[in-house]
Length: 230
Image 1 (cartoon, rainbow, N blue to C red):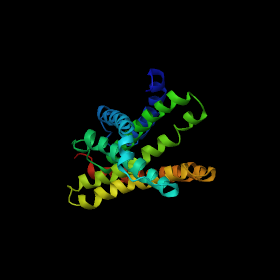
Image 2 (image 1 turned 45 degrees about the vertical axis):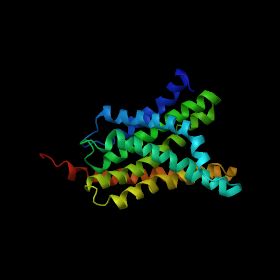
Image 3 (image 1 turned 60 degrees about the vertical axis):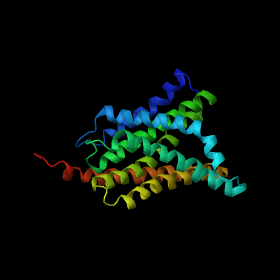
Image 4 (image 1 turned 180 degrees about the vertical axis):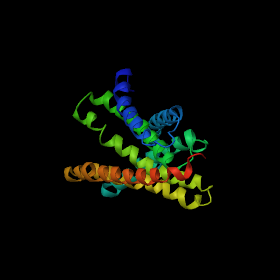
C-alpha cells in the first residue's frame, strides 16, 4: 500500500485538476465539500477495485491471446472501474439538490475519476518511485479517468434533470459513454508500442476534446437553470 509520501504525490495533481475543472462551473459553483467528497469516494473506489479484482477476474471465463486482451480491457478493467467511479458519483452527489444543471455532471464525474486516478498513481509511485512514467500519468491516465467518467456522469445528470423519465435510455448510455473510451485506451495501451502511442496521442486527446465540447455546451445552458433574479 502507498505510504504518506506516495499518497501526497499521487493526490496533489488530482486535486489540482479537480480545482481547475470545478472552477469551470462559473455560473453556480458546486460546494467544495461535495466535490471533495466525490473525489475521496473515487479514491476509495480505486482501493475497492484493487482488492476485488482477483475475484472479478475469476468470475470471467479464461481466454487466451487477443480475446483475453479484449476481455481484460473492456470488461475486467473498464467496466469494473467505470461502474465503481459512477457509483462514487451517485453516492456522493447525484441525489443532492446541488446537482441542478448539466455542468454539474461533468464536475462530479471528473472529481470521481481524478480521485480514482490519484489513488492509482499513488500505488504506482509506491512500486516504481518518482520517475518519468509516474509523472506522465498526471497528464495521461489521470485526465483519461476524469474525462471517461465525466462523460458518463454527464448523461446520468441529464437523466436526473429530466426527472428520470428517460432513465432506461440514459443510464445504459452513461455506462457505455464511460466504458467504451476507457476500454479502447486500455486495449491500445496493452498492445504494440505503436498502439500504445495511439492510446496516448489519440484516445486521451480525443476524450479531452469531447470533454471540452461538453463543458462548452453545458456552460451555455447554465443560464436556463439559473436565470438572473430567479
